Image (cartoon, rainbow, N blue to C red):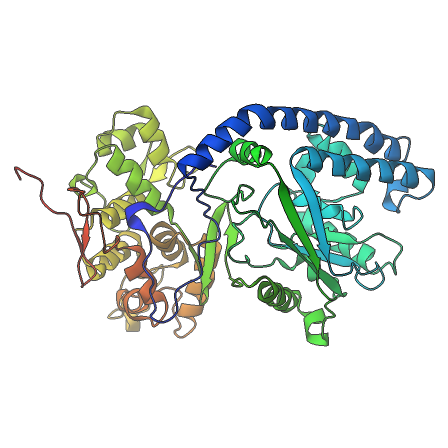
Length: 524
């Protein structure tokens, strides 16, 4: 993960009223000169020793983790481990884990509230999930079972600890894996206290702690009571956050290990018992628990989540990217000195033209191989590694700023609309070419960063009012320009910031009607 900011294509607030919640996927760490000097000194003296000792302790955990499961069959591992294995190995791993975090600088774990028994709350849900240090919450929870990716089994030491934990494993490459995970969670949660508690991070990814991400329903599928667990890092300087955009793993580890002392607050909230409606609807249950935890934390509960490695937020019935890849593509092209409006698209309306990376570079007159590869990767490639140049043409048209929103949406329609396969004689004077779900989802993916499945679902809803399976130009523009909610998205995502730096001669200026005009350079 790299440091960055949305740049001059930052989204505008599309609705009046209270400001939108902060972007939970961005963490910017600002250090004063004095803090930089302090971290340089402590980082050179303290961090290497701490990290080295922590790695030694991490590898010392392996014998205890291995001993607990050594010699046991897969059938035996389907039941909770008891006896001497449980006593010796559990306390060994618990003690060494506390020592590991102590060596990394987490000198104090302050616990508030009372942890419920496994009978009172078979499931624990912890939030906000903001860093790879969050497993420290397992210590005051007495090492509950966790849910993890199956791929982590191949990671040295970590794989052994997951087997020791009897973790519930999910594979992202196996469609049937999620169903098995749901069944296993339900089996353990309804075992009547036979199994230890299961701990979930329901956000599913890390944020900057300024807002709660949308809770995934996995922890709530069993419909049993859950106990919310809050995690706070009340240090004056936040060195632990590991967000989508911000300091990377090594920097977070180095800065945190350079802190003289890091403190963690773990708070157990009262057990949340679901209503009959919540027990039947895991999504409703997850949303209500999210609101309770957000209120206790004093931060917003948002609809932000990760879809296909891209952070999105739900707006009405549509998911849109917080930072569409179109913005990043614009930064790449501007850095390469390319003016998107100077590129001749050369595309026929409704006709797909597949191009290779070499043709892409020639068309855009790009010579740097790294820039070409980076820009080409923003477009969906087929099995032969080719992209549809209509995608490129629409993206360049949006970035050039030479069209009004009405002209841009008309171009999008013309590029991706198709003739109906069968048109009855009585409909010969009908709407003509229509925009079907594939073209509609491509447009929304390129311009708004919407995941294609979400866009296809919205297309089906828009088509329900009529007998056709596609949208006419009038219907598409009514949606993209005049819809009370979604129309504002287009005007927001396709306009650069209205306050560009005055000292930047090449910056763009947003006009009141939604068009974008680039000021002329000297000599034009």
